[in-house]
Amino acid sequence: MAKHHDIKGALDFIRQGYSDGDDSFSFTVADIVGELDISEKKARDVLRAINTRARFWRGDFPASGDLVVSGPVYERITNWFD
Image 1 (cartoon, rainbow, N blue to C red):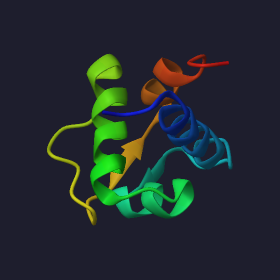
Image 2: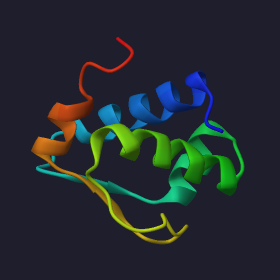
Image 3: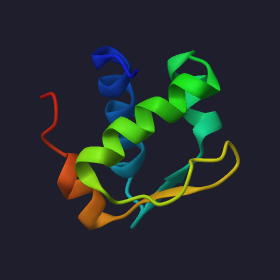
């Protein structure tokens, strides 16, 4: 089960990456693992928890698969846990 501070950390990571100026931002589960210093299983749980609410990624979140954050995706998560 995803913990609040892990979800918040993942959202902060996504916000920071997206706001660097590109049209879209992509990352992998491995990036979340490295950023939050959690296991791959926990990182997948965090992404599932985010996805359950936002519904913008598909699949099982493989470690090497890119997850893309585009403008519409970013708008859905921009105010979470502010």
